[in-house]
Image: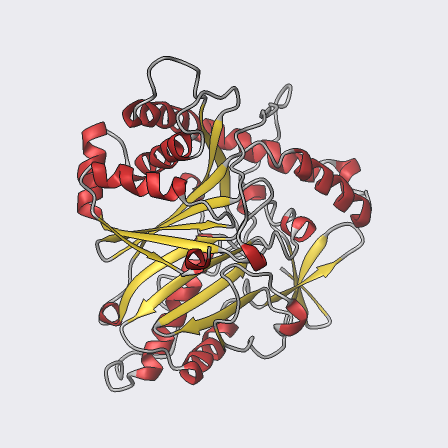
Length: 430
């Protein structure tokens, strides 16, 4: 980070370079992480909590600027964005001019606190770190007697690392650079919800029951859920018919454990679990689909392949000629490349992992969840989060049909996993 005229500025990380170019009202690149409290949220205290923690998080205290060759971050010295009662569908576009130029927002509804982040800032890891500190500070303000021994400070285990871990771990390719080819995948289509609505179906389940189901197949929770989603698309959308195009489920991989990184910026890679439903007399069973997708994931989530992904992505940014191309021309080229790749994936399923809170804060928080907005070519996505022995799967979709979601949860219940279902009532109007 550099300092000129007392104004801090910073570069975008390698992944973040894409988001300002493709972001729009219909493709917001905004994700949501929520905490459900045990009591109704006090807006005034939540605003005060945000005011107190924001100065500590320089990654969130930025606005976006367009330079001659690249977008860049500049320190935002305005007051923290206004905390508001939830007023739009989850993951709605963040209008910076109405948000003090910040690239995130905090809303609430009833007992739920929502943090929504434009992906240019950070990924789910950074979002969770920020939301946890917001919850801690909020609870200190709401229950001063309970937390009289706690200081109004950031947790000692929080890192404020702002490095671009993509660049740090980039290795110049030796020999011919590896190329990534992808073919057109199955696209989930159908009649859309009216009025720009985003439908949400949430399933909550006990982790011990889910682990027991995974043990039967010898897979991890992530592998199981990816397989269940792939099978649900095969059964609920393709109706168990064959297809020349693969069902491709994109899976973001948190790269920090592989490279000993603690950066608060984006640091993840995308892999895709693929299943090609061939025409045959016997229909594929869930066990067969799960075995195929698990094998696909295992082959891709290796240190060697992740190294290759970083090298491939960063090499484009490091290209000397490309760096000299004006931003306006870069934007046109990036949009064309992104548009050409929009049908290479069917859906995305992301797992931000298990959220842990310190005592005595834990007793005041009932659950956590996360949710993804839509992107080009993907009309349905799934997000996974766990807390306090419970795991939550959130489906976000702009389609009226809910067959995929039903098949997904039916697959789990058939394996002995009891699921409690909730929706945001959008589907009741259709």
